[in-house]
Image 1 (cartoon, rainbow over the protein chains, first blue to last red):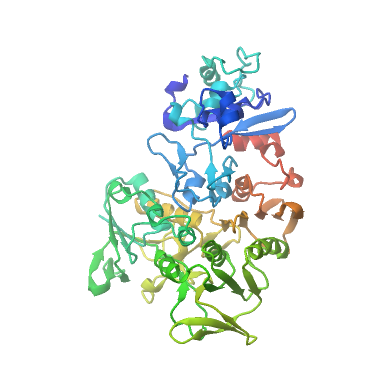
Image 2: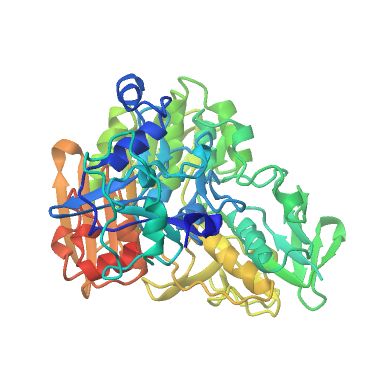
Length: 194
Length: 416
């Protein structure tokens, strides 16, 4: 099944810890994608002030690691708990989005989120920072696009690849995932393995 | 067919959204004694502190009512409900018939008997109109007394500090946030308050509010006098059941509801601070006066009102409340009981304090001060009554997360 066949509203980003090598490129590309310099990692890191926080959490306890980001839940605890109404699930796209102009940094979403994937951004006006599925960039998440090892992939909600079902990784990017990395096929492959 | 909601805050909005999952059309009428479209009540302290303007206080966007086919009747006070004839009776004896009714009248301020309460410049701290009035009195350099050092009281204190008001907080208990904090946590937060010049008078009560027309001070039980320009009463809320008093609906402290939010009267539901729902951590029916609970109860009521089937079985207390920049998150039980053991991690140099309440190998509650990141993972352990015996030792560790759990449990939780 190709990614495009998944109902946008039911798209989820999952991770395969068996494939994750803990390179944290997902974090780097997430930061870049949410900076003013979407196409330039160097500028994103050197010139963004403040540099955006990554909206993916990488858990690591060697040798196991994996990335985790907002599940855009069907029944989002963060939305139901939000005291201001800033956190909303968009009925059209299914994406849970925080209206940062209305967020006051009370951290109730952090209290509520079962995945622990909302970060405190306390550098300016206090706001909750979370995955937005890179919707502004066409809904192709930078973490998925740039994972060199297919460890992060998109699947239909509730239908992730369970361990054991997974195929061997496809052609992995031996360079460790440069910016020029071609994303072609990988997401589809990740979904095919379901 | 029509739905009527008495109330226009979190529970009522949750109910509209619950109804619209199942019934896209049937009209809803919302009755509110406040003149404002739905707004976030907790934002009143941010409004007072100058962090949020009134036009940013809306809980749902401007098109909410229209998009959901809701007729808001604002600034209209419902007096009582005639359950036999299925009508809400407004002031002036105007009657609003309903097929399904939600009572979401919220809480009303608890005010203990105290001499001088009728004086001017004595305020509650619940509604937008309360803070609009406080704003006029809370000018830079003025003196305030806040009575009550729990959540709402401390949010009032924070806002007043931001307005450069000289604040004294008084509470009968020996520490601030007595139900959630222990002495260590209270001392951390008290330190932050005192750094901002807040004076804390714990373990005492106000005998009398002094002044002629307007409050000019308070007299404490030991006879000492604290002069002030205005007073904020923040002693929590009681269920606002006035509207259904003597109607025969089953009330304890609040309107009693089952897990589908049905009251004892057919076609009548209740949700939010006015209701007494099931608290599964305490295994008891009680008011759980927090936003997440109000929303879930309201949503559950709405689904059932529209003919769906929903039950809310997971009510419990949880709060996140930064105090002058110090994040504090708590959930579930607090305080020690016989069957509960605790785990504490305290790093004084970081102002970080973590306490976990464990009952029969399950997490029953927790408190996090300053380092609150990923708190929701703990909340989820409470909500799902997860057996934590395999990873209890790692609770509260800096890198605590799904990798702390056994692989099977981790995948079950993460790969959903």
